[in-house]
Amino acid sequence: MKKRLRRKKKSYKRLFILPILVLLVVLLGIIAFSQLTKTKAPEQQNARSMSQAKSVKEENSSEKSSVATPKWLSAKNENQLPILMFHYVTSDEDQLPKDSNNIDVTTFENELKALKEQGYTTVSAADAQRVLTTKEKPSNKLVWLTFDDGSVTMYTRIFPLLKKYQMHATSFIITSFVDNGQGGILTWEQIKEMKESGWVDFGSHTVDHPDLGTQTLEAQRSELADSKADLDKNLTQKTNMICYPAGGYNQNTLDLSTELGYQYGFLDPGRNGAVAMAAKESDGLLTLPRFRMMDTTSAEDMLQMLQPAATYNEQNN
Image 1 (cartoon, rainbow, N blue to C red):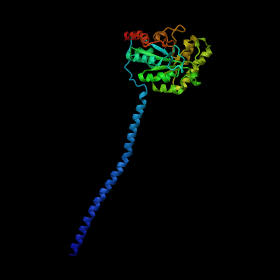
Image 2 (image 1 turned 180 degrees about the horizontal axis):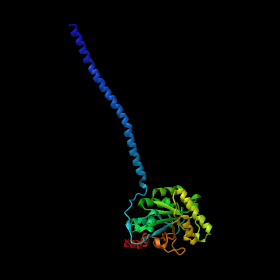
Image 3 (image 1 turned 120 degrees about the vertical axis):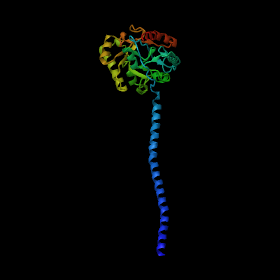
């Protein structure tokens, strides 16, 4: 009888302990799952943060030059590249005096629209140099937009329109004007922002904008060397373009330019014997002709300037 009672007590104990053990296992499982979830949460949050950061970075870089590089065409002979010479673009007379170099902003935008509608490719400096030195081209309808003097309207008026129409341009800087904070002139901060965008690149327009053809050898050396050094330092580049102020140059200018590392020189049509025509390598890379754009130049006038080169390039395929 006593043995049966002891066996019953042991049975009851087992029945009582078993549910407790099951409950403990369940609780341990819940605790383990909770810890695992907490560990994964930061990882998921980090992944979301990285994804969001990537999206922001992509969005911020969307303003940069993003036109897909087209497959370049091959030519039988040297290419022709029309180079347009601009100065200022503004409708505000309090910013700049109204003269033949000051183009109304509406007129300028109409010119960009015409280029876009007619299928012209505006080339960067690097692309232009490739066009001029090889038998390769991104299209038959080419144009190089250049801007002299470094007017603040390059930033306030021209740059927004270049981004809007996704067009490239080159600006030639008078470095002492920038260094001295001259009114109506770009700042280094504005220049750096435009260069970083990929839509604008920069070359020299000398230190003080003198007619180099009238300067002594040493004066020319100073103008060419010091402006190049200033641009190289501020823009972390190797400046290889010189735009001669007022189109003035002589043989000393060409020799010094070569010695100092300039490879491309730009003339002023109508001055020093320069003729408005499309540029090509056989004319000399340090004496590249341009077409002057004035306040009276219409979009139709501009297209007439460009058409002969487009016809030649098409026939040169």
